[in-house]
Every structure is written in C-alpha cells, then in structure tokens.
Image (cartoon, rainbow, N blue to C red):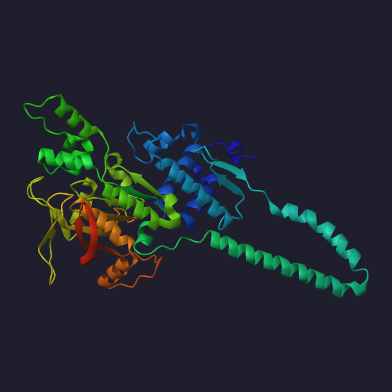
Length: 438
C-alpha cells in the first residue's frame, strides 16, 4: 500500500512522516559525500509531497536542478538518468543498512523520476505466527525426559549449519560488493560514487585557430565565435563549405582515441561509471560535481584553460599556427629549463612535451585529470605513460610519496613528460619534472 495515497501533500512538511524519512536518508552515511544525489533526492521528494510528481520528467529535472539549457536533449545528455540510477543504488544501500528498521520505505520505480513511499512489511507479525506451532511441537517432544539431550544436540546442529551458511553468505556478499582496487592515480579519478567524464579534444577548434591566427578563448568557444574561420575576399564555394564544415562538425584526433581506450582499461570494473563527451557539449556548471578527464592542450581543448592558473607548466604560443608551442616553467628548479619546446607540427620527427595534472574540481567534490600535449604525439605519450606500471612507480618516487594501490588519500600534482615522436606516434616517454599541488 502506497503511503503517498494516504498522507496528503502539505505546505509544511516538517510534520510529514515521509519528509522526516527523507531527512534521515539525507543525513545517512551513503549520502554524506554526494551533494548532487542529496540535492536530487530532496528536490524530487519535495515536488512529490507537494503534489507535483507528474512534472518530474527527465527534461524538467535537467532544467530545474542540473541547470541545463531549456533546449538541451536528454537523448544526447544522459546525466539525469545516470544520477537517478545512482540514487536508486544509494537508497537500496540505506534500507539494507541504517534504514532496515524504517516503518516507511522510499523507492524510485524504474522508468520514473518520482519517488514512491510505502509501508514496510513488519516481520514481527510473521514471527509471532510461527511461535505457537514451534512451541507445540517442542512441548510434545519434551514429554519424555530422555529425549531432551538429543533435542538439544539437534538444535545445536541446526544452529551451527545456519550460522555457517550466514557467514558464507556474508563473505560472498562482501566480495561481490567490494570496491574496485585501482592503481594510483586512477584510484582518485575512477570511483563508484562519481561518474567520470572524459572530454576529448576538438580538432576543428585547433584548425580554426590556425586558420584565423588567433588564440581564442573558452568564452568564445562556448559561444561558437572562435569556430568561425575568416573568409578571404576571393573565397569561393569550396572555402565557404570548408568554413561551415569546421564550425559544425565534430572531430577528434587519433591520440585522443588512443588515450580513451587506455583510460577505459585502467578503470577496470568501474567502466560503467565512465562516459565520453565532446567539449562543445559541455557546460561550466557541470564541472562542480563528478570526476573529469580533459585530453588535449588549450589549443585543442579550451576547457583546460580553467586549470592554467593552478599549474607551474603552462602552454604558450607566440604566433598561433606559425611558431612551435612551448611549456613555460614559471618557477624552474635546479637542473630545469625555463621553457620546453615541442614539435612545430604534428606528424614530424623530434621531441614533444606533455603535462599530466591531477587537481580537485571547483567544489572539491571530485577530481580533474588533464593530459596536455603540445602536439598530438605528446598527448598520446601522456596516456601511455600513465598506463605503464613502471612509469607510475617512477612518478610516485619523484613526488616522494607513499601511495598503496587503492589509497583513498588525495594527492594533487603535475608532471612534465618528454616523448620522442616518429611518424606521428610517440616511441618513448621520459619523466622530466614534477610538482606537488597543495
């Protein structure tokens, strides 16, 4: 029987048993480190108790709670569905642990976004119904004193079997629900509490910058301005089609695909928590929660510019499209250069550089990993470096930290990587310098 059909929606929810249940859930352990899920549960519960359950569609929640634009497409953006699915798991965890004695249960049926409240089935009545029958059988058996020792032995044997079964069941359940143990630093970027969004580079953005000879900015990119390639005075139909193609199509590089495949492998059993997004489809407010991985430098992935003021090694380009890009070393240490110059163009032979950076997001509710190569070869090299166990141990040693695999502690850093490029691919990677970010 649904409680929501018996308790009318009221303006003051403080005396409503269902709202009090929501409060207990929000303050429970499963919800302590997930502000987004807390906000989601509170919002849909409040709307339901006020009689607005019919308005709780995916589009409505995305607009009202996730601050998505009014014309966003739930088909292309699954963030609302993903968070509701996570919320169902958290509710299941609560009612099997802290809330196992709750008189009212809260569920979100599949295919719906409105919570349903129902009365919990009381186990006491069922237990009382069994006691008289058991007592009658026991009384009949105890009529003969000689049977008492045998009955006690029988009961003890049954108890031992039940206890053994319970221990085995608990061990099996613990193994099934044990969190995935990942190697550091992947243990900080992949976890069961957050979605990890991989944002690949926009190759068209890089080409438009070169053709326009302008650096561009994230603000211009989100408004689409930096994607408009200037049309020369004698431009013909082909030039116009090229400009239109660059501004509207979605392309990324082979290096990004290679890094995405590598990152998926490193996510292990948490691959279901990982998704890939194109930078043009991302919005600033989305970065407040969850984990993010940015692939590419500011010249191809403008979202990386949000991290630049926190880093020691910063990409610089004197004349866009005409000079080689470099990493400026803001505070060189002994033995380090003031700048590191990469390839003039991707596909040529020589040395390229990349940085690997791990920082907290804006709200400290997740982590941000950035793999920035001056050219595509450097970006691919950064992904290869992290995927190699020996390189990770070298990074841990250079940072002078002790990190057991799966460690929950937060360690923020940036590392400069040098790669040797041959025929458009990195052939080797070397750790050049590291910094701790405190």
